[in-house]
Image 1 (spheres, rainbow, N blue to C red):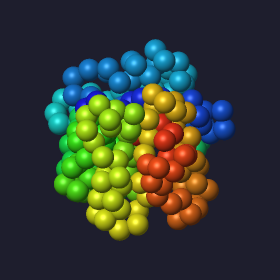
Image 2 (image 1 turned 180 degrees about the vertical axis):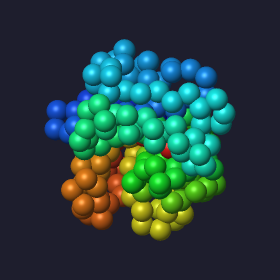
Image 3 (image 1 turned 135 degrees about the vertical axis):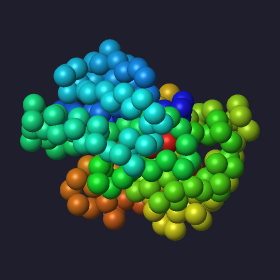
Length: 212
């Protein structure tokens, strides 16, 4: 919670909606808060944003019993299909959270520097095995004493070459590199997207936290 998942989804919608047929499914326990935020922000036709109220740990609905999310995706396909991309946002914030690959084709896992530079080396399935790790809110690093170099080193070590992007939606609100990664995946060329260090000029771009 608070790592920037919904803000990243909003940025991706703004970046991709003009070129892709797009929809979003959000997950919250008892509310439609995230879906309401996205609708109010005007990032998509409100009807293309569906909310799943899980009534339990949101991670259960993206990993163990994915029926409600599959129903939401299928309803969107029925109403607006064929769709090029559906962004499914998890609720909550947990290093153990992962999506079922019966629900998603790729997983973006979002953490932020406010949790400290120790988070990548703590690992967990999202940090180590997600298709893309986004380390968000890099602009806060000096304020919380987080060393981005340490985070980059530890993320590279635990992820064994899987891509990592450093982002700040405050300083670079377009999420350009994350959007590029999504487009590369859709084009079937994600293997060409490489990790970027926090010192790389483009890697300071803002960045789907923990899973998005």
